[in-house]
Amino acid sequence: MAFPRLIFFLMLAIIPICNAQGLKLGYYEKTCPGAEAIVEKTTSHYISRAPTLAAPLLRMHFHDCFIRGCDGSVLLNSTKNNLAEIDAIPNQSLRGFQVIEAAKSELEQKCPGVVSCADILALVARDAISLIKGPYWNVPLGRRDGKVSIMLEALFNLPPPFANITTLKAQFASVGLNAKDLVVLSGGHTIGNSHCSSFTSRIYNFTGKGDTDPTMDANYVARLKSKCTSINDVKTIVEMDPGSFKIFDGSYYSLVEKRRGLFQSDAALLDDNETKAYVKLQAMSHGSTFFKDFAESMEKMGRIGVLTGKAGEIRKRCSFIN
Ligand code: HEM
Ligand SMILES: *[C@@H]1O[C@H](CO)[C@@H](O)[C@H](O)[C@H]1NC(C)=O
Ligand SMILES: *[C@@H]1O[C@H](CO)[C@@H](O)[C@H](O)[C@H]1NC(C)=O
Ligand SMILES: *[C@@H]1O[C@H](CO)[C@@H](O)[C@H](O)[C@H]1NC(C)=O
Ligand SMILES: *[C@@H]1O[C@H](CO)[C@@H](O)[C@H](O)[C@H]1NC(C)=O
Ligand SMILES: *[C@@H]1O[C@H](CO)[C@@H](O)[C@H](O)[C@H]1NC(C)=O
Image 1 (cartoon, rainbow, N blue to C red):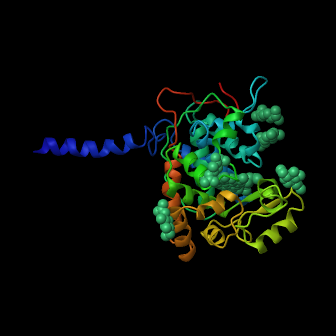
Image 2 (cartoon, protein in one colour):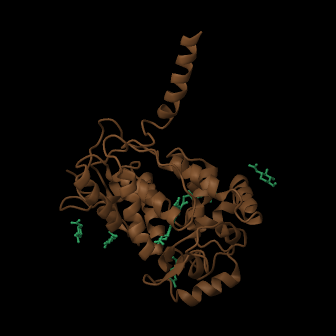
Image 3 (tube, rainbow, N blue to C red):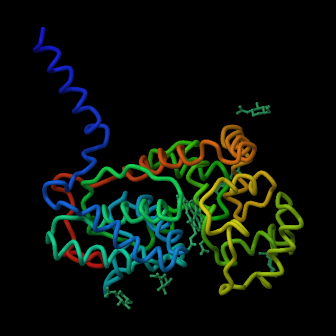
C-alpha cells in the first residue's frame, strides 16, 4: 500500500501550488538566492529613515493589484504616446517608487533579468508593514511584469473615496475579493495621510446645497474643516487615523464605528450587515483578529490576475517595458 500513500502525499504537495495560480513561496530560492533578503534589507534601509513611507508603499501594491492584476503596471512611466496609471488622479500621493527602484537595481546586479518588479512591489509592501510592527503575511512569488499601463483604467478600476457599499462590494467582487476582504483591507487606512480634496465635498457640499454628510460625526466635521479650509483645498494633507496614523493597529474600526471614518467608503462599511458586524467586533475587541485577517486578505489580494509562466516579461527597469 506504499504506492497510493506516496501519490496521496504528492498530491498534498501539489495542491497548494495550484491554488496559488502558479505562485510559489521561495520561488527565487534557486534562481536568485537571497533575493527576498535583498528586498528586505533595502526596504529596511528606507523605512528606518522614513517610516511614513510604509503607507504609500502598501497603497501602491493595492493599486497595482486592482488594475490589470498584480503585474507592476502601476510602476510604468507614461510615454510620448501613452498616459500611464501613474498619471491618473487617484495616483495622488503615490510615492516610494525609489524603494522599488533601489531593490531592483541591486537584484539586477546579482541576478539580471530574474526577479520581477511585480514581485518586488509585493515584497516591499509586506516588509514595510512588518517593519512598522504591523502584520506579516506570506508572499508567494513568480509574478511576471505586464507591458501595459493605461491611465483611464486606474480611474475606472480603483474605487473612489465617495463610493457607496454597493459599488465597493461590486468592485472588490470583480477582482475575486469578498465583503470580508473589503472590510479587512479597508483597515489599511489605519496608517497614512489623505489630501483634503479626497473628502472636502463631504464636509462642504455634500448634496450641492453647501451641506455636510449627516452620517459624519459633527465634531469630526468641525475638526476637518479647521484643517481643510475650503472645498478647493488641494494641498493640505491630514492624518487618516488622527493621533495614530503611524501605528498599524485596529483603531481604524473604532473611528468608523464612531462615525469618524474619513471617506464615504469608510463610512459605507456600516451600511452592510456583514461589514458592519466586523467593524463592531474589531472596535469592541481592539482589533483582536485584525492582524490575522489582514494577512489572509493581503495574500489573497496579491494573487489577483497575476501573470505567470511565459506571460508578460521580467522588466529590466521597473518604470519601462523592455
Ligand atoms: C476600499 C476602497 C478604498 C478607497 C476608496 C480608498 C481611497 C483612498 C484615498 C482617497 C486615499 C487618500 C489619497 C490622497 O488623497 O492622498 C487613500 C489612502 C490610503 N489608502 Fe486607501 N482606499 C481604499 C482601499 C485601500 C486598501 C485596500 C488599502 C491597502 C490594503 C489602502 C491603503 C491606503 C493607505 C495606506 C493610504 C495612505 C497613503 C499615504 O499615506 O500616502 N486603501 N485611500
Ligand atoms: C518618468 O517620467 C517623469 C516625468 O515625465 C520623469 O521626470 C522621470 O524621470 C521618469 N522616470 C524615469 C525613471 O525615467
Ligand atoms: C500623478 O499624476 C499627476 C497628473 O495627474 C502627475 O503630475 C504626478 O506626477 C503623478 N504622480 C506620480 C507620483 O507619478
Ligand atoms: C451606489 O452608487 C452607484 C454609482 O454611483 C449608484 O448607481 C447606486 O444607485 C448607488 N447605490 C445606492 C444604494 O445608493
Ligand atoms: C455646491 O454644489 C452646487 C451643485 O453642484 C454648486 O452649484 C455650488 O457652486 C457648490 N458650492 C460650492 C461652495 O462649491
Ligand atoms: C440586516 O440586519 C437588519 C437588522 O438586524 C435586518 O433587519 C436585515 O434584514 C438584515 N439584512 C440582511 C440583508 O441580512
